[in-house]
Image 1 (tube, helix red, strand yellow):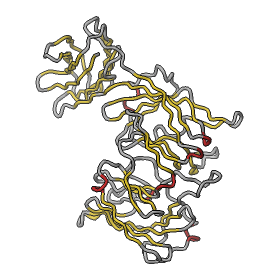
Image 2 (cartoon, one colour):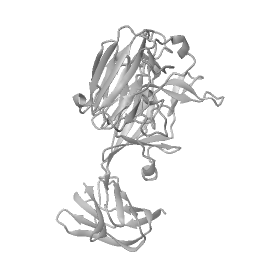
Image 3 (tube, helix red, strand yellow):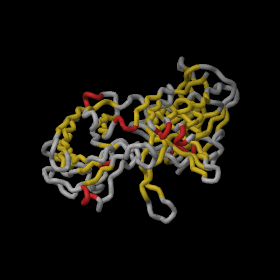
Length: 426
C-alpha cells in the first residue's frame, strides 16, 4: 500500500533554492563522425572517432559482456560500411566459414539493456544462468569457456572468424583469423590492466586494446535498435541517441511540462537500462525537413546520490551532429537502509531542499504512531511530529518555511528501529 501524507512546517527552518540550470551542447560532428562520452556533473566530454575501435569488453567484476561498435553505418554517403556480426553455423574454429551461408542468419546486435550484455552475448539461452552467449560457465574450472564461433564483417568488407576461448580470473582470451584460417592471432585482455575504465576497446585495424574514457555518465552515439516502420514487423535501424553509462539510472517523463515536472512520481521508474533516454524524443519532419523535439518530455538522471533533469531543445542532425539540452541540478538524494526492523529505505528528495521536500520510506508492519524528528549538527531536535504509517511505501510531502543554513538529520522511527538521512539546508 502506498500512503501519501502532507505536513506543513511553519517558520521552523527552510532552504534556499539551489537548483542550477545550464544549457549544454554535445557535438558529434558532420555525419555523426564521433562518439561523445559526457560527464553530467563537470560537462567534460571525451570524443572518439566512430572507426577507432571494433569490439568492447566489459571490465566490471563478474561481467563477461562483449560489444560490437555499431556507430558506423553505410547508410550515409561517404561513410565506411558498418560492422556486422554473425553466429557461425559451426562450433569448430578450424573449419572454414563460407560467407554466403551466413546470409541465411540474422546479424547480431547489442541489445542496449546493460553493460553486461553485448552482441556476443546475444545468442545465450536466457533460461540458463551459466550461458553467456559466447561461452558457458564451468563450475569445475570457475571459468567461462567458449563454445560458439562468430564471423565478423569488417568495414573494409573483409571477414574475421572469432572464438572467445575463455574468461577466467578477469582475463579474456580470444583468437581470430581469416575465414579460411589464415592470419590467426590470439589476444588476451586483463580487466586488471584497465581499472577505472568500464570498457576495453579493441581495434582490428591497429591490433591494439585501450581503455574507454572514464568517469562518463551519458554516451551520445549511433547504435542499432528495433523499430516498427508501420507494418508491425520490427526491423533494426541505425539511430542517433543517448545511452546511459554504467551504474547510471534514468527515468522518462512524458506528456508533462518539462519545467515544472516533479520527480517524485517517477522515483520507481529509475532504471539502469541503457536506452531510457534513447532517440525517440525527436522525430524527422519531412514537411519542414527538420528534426522536431517532443516539447512534453523530460528525463531524470541519477548519478550516485545526485539527481539531474535533462530537457532536449534541439538536434541538428547529420550536418553538425549537435545535441542541445538543458540540465538542471536537483541536488543530492540520500538513501539509507534499516538492516533489520520495521523501517527501511528512507529517501529525501530534493536534497539540498528547494522549498519543500518529499520523504519516502517503507514499513514492514503498520504503525499507528511513527515518530519523525529533525536534529541539527549539535544533536538538538528542531522539529518533531508523529504520523500513522501503513505497511509498504509511505510518502510524505514536507513544506518548509524560512531558510536556515546548516546540516540536519531526519530521523524516522526510534530506538533500534530507526533510519536517518542527512538533509542539507542553505
